[in-house]
Image (tube, rainbow, N blue to C red; front, side):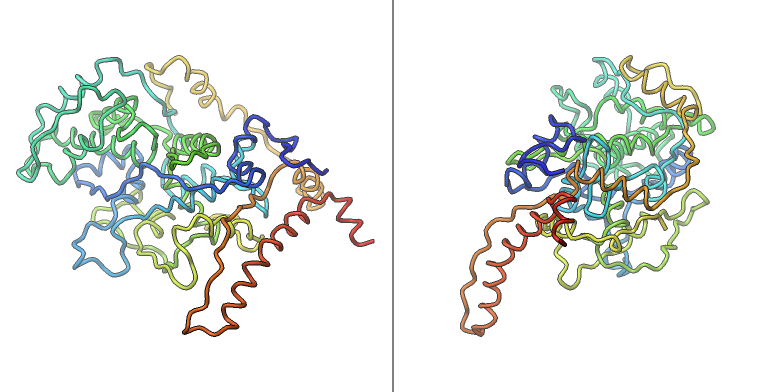
Amino acid sequence: MAHEEGATPELLDALVDKRHRSYMSAVRGISLGTFRARVPMSTMPIHRRWVPRLRASGLLPIARLVEGDMADPARRPRDRAPRFQFDMSLLAALLDRWRPETHTFHLSVGEMTPTLQDVAMLLGLPCAGRAVGAEDVGLSWRDDLLARFAGVQRNELALPYRPLPANQAHGPTKRWLLQFSVDYMRADADDFTVARHFEAYLLWLFGWVMFCSSQGDSCPKQLIPLARSIADAPLHEMPQFSWGSAVLAASYRGLCTGVTKVSAEEPIFVGCPLLLQLWSYERFPVGRPEMDFEPYVQLSPDHDDVDRPTMGSLWCLRRPSWVGVQTRKSYHDFVGQFDALVDTDVRWTQQGQPPGSRWADKVRPYVDSWAAALDDVVFEDRLHSDEAFADYLRWYLPRTRTRVVHVPPEAPIEAARVSETYPVVRDQNFAIAVEPEEDMVAVRGWLKTPYEMATDFI
């Protein structure tokens, strides 16, 4: 079926569609920008005394991914990266194709979405365990936090201590947390001091890697009880959480809120940008760096079966290279590359305890639903049919927007330089004049109904 210009396809939510980035670009012709995110701008080393607790809590694999290579640059192997480089232009181009109605990316080749399998294989996070959510901390959270850290003795490298600002309402700031990084922990630190440094590290890991938010430069205070429970619990009684499902849910929520962010200022991308960028690298040849794809086998000195590389280790810890005509950090180029994807470009497959007693009432139904998830599994026993799937796509595709047509700014006409020949500049200017017309012809052809396409051959 054909749709009038600006009309919402019938399977989409009109309230969302009118504010969606794809609507602003494809229908209203607005040139969109990229995002910024609260991602770690530096690596955070792991102290050897933290490893048993990270391993027992299921957080060691993701901690290794953001640890980077802490060796002195003069001694670092040429193929090792000092830290992972986030590309918000790539994430913005991917976000344009997200639809909250289906929780999938609508692409010209079909629909795709990150799953729990992707989280487990890329980040190494467990998907079984208690549900993760915000806990009530009360008005005294700041006083309790400062009192708990008051007795921490730091080494001689630490700068003068700066207390948490009294007007800080959202949670501990990054500046305050970094005062307790491993670099400032005393060599002879007792168990209590090690636990407090570890708690500060966990809050940094939660707020700037796993659950990035838009609350300024702070970690949400509701995550403090989670970090404290992991830092203080006896090792054999370590609470087990479903970190994988929490990170995936936070990423879905960030995508659903991000698709309507079209302000002139760079909006903030929330969720787990690390997961989405690694997932994009695995699936699409868009913005993907050139890498050595030999198996990543570097192991830490005290590794075990848990502390081993994940599928994300290659992208995070091996040095990337940008070669040929590949354009890095270019939102407009990535938009065009996603539009030009064909089926063969996509990599389609990948190479508990009861909840606690301090949950807010509003999240209790979701916790109960998660606990009963295995009771609601539906097993599909009908055989897959290519013909049935093709019939579904013929019904589905005209009712959704599967392509995002970017409206580029007008390209300038290049003036010939003395060192250039006339035919070269002539051909460049001709391409600038012809490409917009070709794009409009392609768009008009895509918007045709099945009946109109069939009559073209009569």
